[in-house]
Length: 243
Image 1 (tube, rainbow, N blue to C red):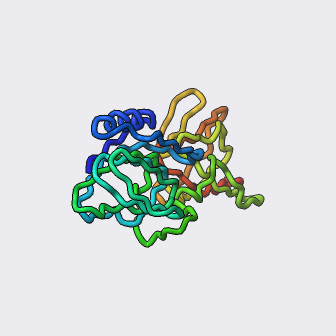
Image 2: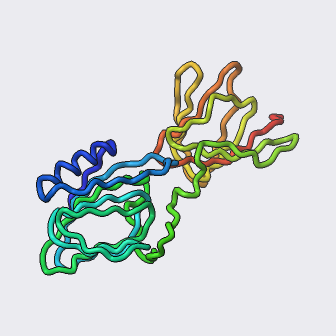
Image 3: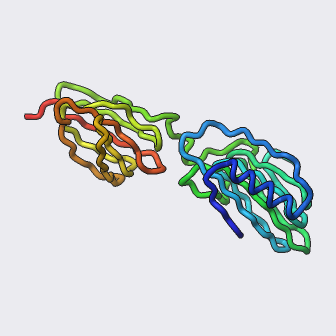
């Protein structure tokens, strides 16, 4: 198997087209509508060979798959669709989280050129026991909020508690903390603290650990920037009475 990680979907489509035209007749155009992504995505191009009798196994992806048959003949099973036989020059697509399986049922070699647009930091394939149900199955990222957010949890005269979820490339807006606070990392990562004057520093928060942060200096504000590629989720306990 040959796999290439590309920086943009456009690049993957361009290489897809060039490679395909070198080995087989011009393919049918493939189009896939992509839902707004909660996390960064990546485009991947894979050339996969199938020996006689070889199967991909039943699996699904947290993203969309576009495939083009370079050589040979394949049997394609996609949940909710009739079984298809595809030959060199044919193409097919598989929707987000849709169960599918590809088999070389012939006595000759077969090969696919596959383009993916996938959620980043999630394994490419989810194998059995996922079923061939025509209903989409959830991905690990599906339960995430659609945007960075702060949700109040509890407040009295002594403390104020909230839960913050900070998505990559979606910082919390400029703000300040008048009181010291304890950070409890539910899902850790590297948080970059960007001051209003442009200076910045980083905190590495490990999942399941707690951290102490002092009150902000007077007349300062900062933004919280998730420097990783996975969401950071923390519970913040702010102490309203310092003595």
